[in-house]
Length: 298
Image (cartoon, rainbow, N blue to C red; front, top):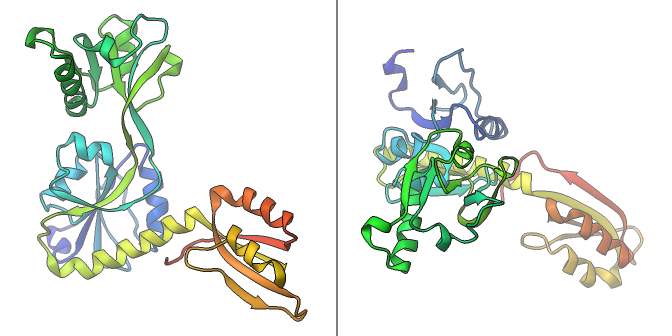
């Protein structure tokens, strides 16, 4: 691929591997962003839009977006903060996947029970910046002298092994560590995947396309959160029914052949649908149907 073929295209950074990669591909498919990535190539052209996808390590995406090297990107909130790029990127949309907690964890059978117990000791982490900021606040609060402050050490992988090998008293990680005999004593950050753009975009002419892609992705995200609930209810119970299914703005209510009944259609959060159906049955709703959404605009 020639560099010239990227001229004038919106550059969209996607994590090239890891826990976010597959979810991002599903998101692109749902937004009808059509592409074919050739083996081992990290740049590919979108067939139906003036876009080029750039596959990068998730940890590099905040810097590429913040410096204006690419126009849009998907990465984790924790990665943005760790890269110290939060003032250089704008969070456009929360994507609802890649959720995890960045926690302080210690050996379950050990003497350390709180972060105050851990202060002044050794902490290993792959989030050196966030850990440093967190424990600086703890050390300041406890008024620890410089030589007694918490020591933060970077470990790129196998963080859980550090405690077992005696290399650290505690760890800070977003991974599940229960199998390693560790447990959380504090949560530093709740994080998820987000769509970001540069706070100082270099290509203002691409803003309409950025808005279009953002709208499409928002539709896919919303479709994953909601279902359509349809049911029949006696006209006299409509007030009770719409209190259970208020919809995003208002439910759609249609008359039936039987004047004493109406049909109701409403968007319902997918995570609450079983409870909603139970409540509808209690007030006499019948023929309750649930339909999944492939995409929407809300």
